[in-house]
Image 1 (cartoon, rainbow, N blue to C red):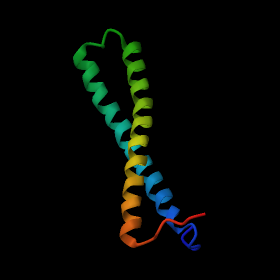
Image 2 (cartoon, one colour):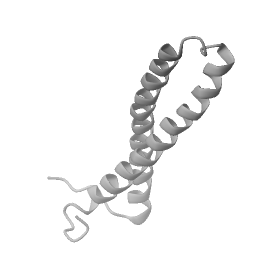
Image 3 (cartoon, rainbow, N blue to C red):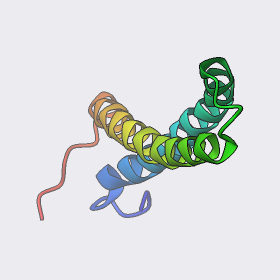
Length: 93
């Protein structure tokens, strides 16, 4: 995409958006797993381990989605500012 001038504008959106989506998704979901273990222990879910595991599973999957969405949106904003800074104008098709 960087080779052809017509699609050069979109290359930063794809590279930065997807990369930040994966990184932020990993950080949010892993952070949720670490924090939920401590919170469930404090809240007293030792007697109901299946319910605690279910809460952790749904939180982990939700963290993947929320983190990915946050990462993609922030990556697109950064790519837009970087395109403007570099001077790659938006191509009209």
